[in-house]
Amino acid sequence: MSSQTPDLFGFKPAQGDLFADEPARNDGVGVANPEAVRARLLKLLAEARAAEFRPPWNERTTRTIQIVFPQMANWLPHDEAEQLRFAFAQEMRRLTDAA
Amino acid sequence: MPFATGAGPAVWCHGLLPDYHAFRGSYGGYAFPLCDNRAGHGPFNVSPNLLAGLAANYGAPVSAQDTFDSILALLSATSYTLRFAEDLEDVFPHVPFPSDHALFLEAAALGGEIRAVETFTRPPDAAFLNPTVARIENEATEALRASDWSEGALFLCANRTGRVSGVSAAVWAFSVSGYRLLYRWLDAREGLPVDHALVTAFRDVVGRIAELIDLFARADHLLGHALNATLSREVLGLAEAEPILPDE
Image (cartoon, rainbow over all chains, first blue to last red; front, side, top):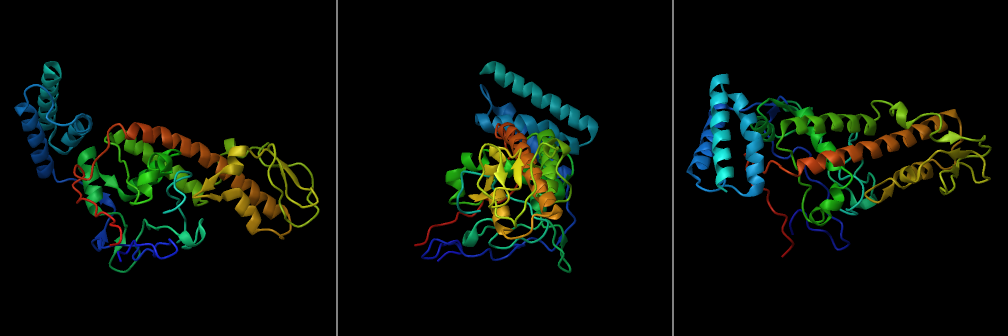
């Protein structure tokens, strides 16, 4: 039986652990690694550049990427962020026009 | 809560560790503490990977408190349990984190209000507890044994004294996982003297429910926007959730 299997009366067992297996320390603030952010933005930009007629993602993912790309760039130095935002916006405009 | 999905909020914020039987008898639910006060742990109990994933996508640091509050808002939205009723019978509630950072912050602010009202850390807003709300029309002359609600009013005593007006149908019907809050609140206190303390507490609960109905409706508006573009587990850098498999 899995831990979520209901008993004969349909009741599921109690929750086993309130804290699961999270790392011991957690200061409660999440920050991003700029290197990882840069790599992801460059990958998305490369995917957009490689596409010919339409965005290379489905409609839903495209909507999400168009929102998060400019936000993610905040983790990079100002000039680099501006350049990436500009390049991405340009690619998305090209793909929208081509579609 | 794993049963009676399709109505009421999917989550409730407690100031203290809730009883396993909170709200729905033996069905129980799941508790997720925001804080972890065990030695060598915490102080927060929100996944650092989730916080880092949100921070990366939002382009700004993200706190555990904001994350907790935004989850509370999104899962309290009036239509959440109805929209996802089928899924909720089988899997844990999914949190549709919005892609837009501003929307996340809005959800966090709203969730903070819901938390404050549900945990009694502030009184209901005056707009929801003015003198016309839960107004005691005449003196109660017996111990508490409330009548059913009819056309905005009810009686606190079996001899039809202690008439209370200004209780809306929505407040009277407000339920969490099938548990009618105001009715059960009165039922649990049957036999107590209807004194100033009880009346004050009763009016406070009515005001809280009225405010929560409004907050949940506002959360629903946010949920509608959030669902247009959500952050997937993949985008957040989280592993795929393990499916809950039926028994062999």
